[in-house]
Length: 267
Image 1 (cartoon, rainbow, N blue to C red):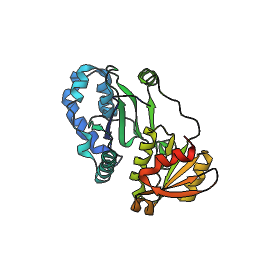
Image 2 (cartoon, rainbow, N blue to C red):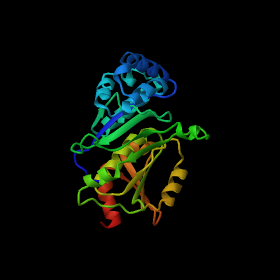
Image 3 (cartoon, helix red, strand yellow):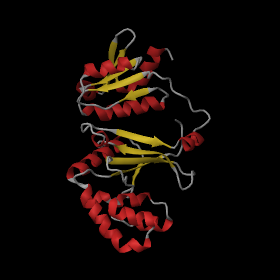
């Protein structure tokens, strides 16, 4: 979007297996400080102490800044998941900062939580925030399914946009599909590079989904090109480009993808 200076802040809030232990540790820390905190925090301390991190009262925020870090209470599965997230960010050279006290108090949050912040916006400097909602559908009476979402501060986002910001077309120009776990990190890098070059790209990492299903979705999205990264492409440092208008496809070196797409699109 062309916003300069924005930064990613993230944390892991654990899951129902490890969060109860953290709640107990947090309550043990807060109880001796109860009389020093606001009425809302005193109430939250019993019902849901994680919500105390949302308090805006300066004295309470100072207390919460010294609270135990939830990352010290993560179970092995949540720790491994967070390590994988951080490894992907490093691989993609995406700058980030871990805030071990950025905690969501809503029960349907699982593992990764994050904010995108921008200096110069004042105390409320988050452009957007969200995380994994793996427990949300189950909370509403449905099955356990993965989920992810975020909320945007629209006014702050609009104020931060450069005048040259372009609005992408409804239909994506490019959809990236992968086969196998190894293709995900490579595909994220390819998608990021193309977006920086001004291309409208959709990539929805689903390593277990069949190629047929992913191609069907690309067709539903009316994508002009599909980039395929299977095991052989990853092994050879290549990408297969499929032209959805005529069905032709070719395999090229991954470094030439953007240039070849320009040639094929005539732009």
